[in-house]
Image 1 (tube, one colour):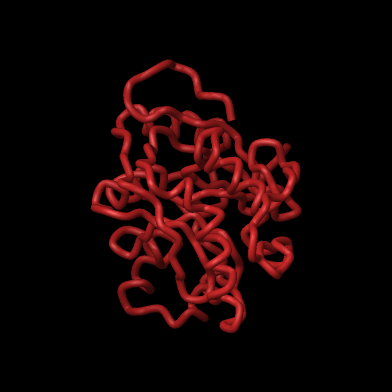
Image 2 (cartoon, helix red, strand yellow; image 1 turned 90 degrees about the horizontal axis):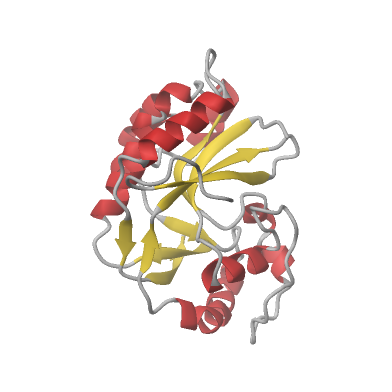
Length: 236
């Protein structure tokens, strides 16, 4: 498979959280297939209507946003760089996840000190940036529709995305943009369904390299263990 863009994600390892996220969004990043939908008591909407936009990205938290490859580099070179970088980064432990309203969409965010998360995302953003092509004018124009602050504009021009470095906020997206009249109801149903998954620490101990196909769907390519470890990438 060939990809038009790449990104670096945190994706939960196989387990209850990863299973729920893939089932809720209706797509598994590793297989590209739709798992059976989860039971969410109290939800009156069809999850497919709530997750159209995030479904193509899969269940994840972005560490380095999607980018096209720069001239002179390649997917193989990017994979080697991911592997080398991961070996220098320490794992990060999140105190717990919590369901959060972010504007008009819902996501899981981290509780507790987010400094180590910001440091991780900053290293990934900075150290892999030689592989990133400059964004096209249309992409810059689309980002600017969000009425960026002067600092966000500066980050967009330097890193190709306005929500990096100190503007970064770790989140695993669960819905697209929701009507205001539906947000509380969807949040209440999701809160109950997610409750067993939100009272425990989460360890980020690898990076996931993903690629976007020409239909706009993202696929897991490989996981790279954080810290010194085996010389090979983990299975997807």
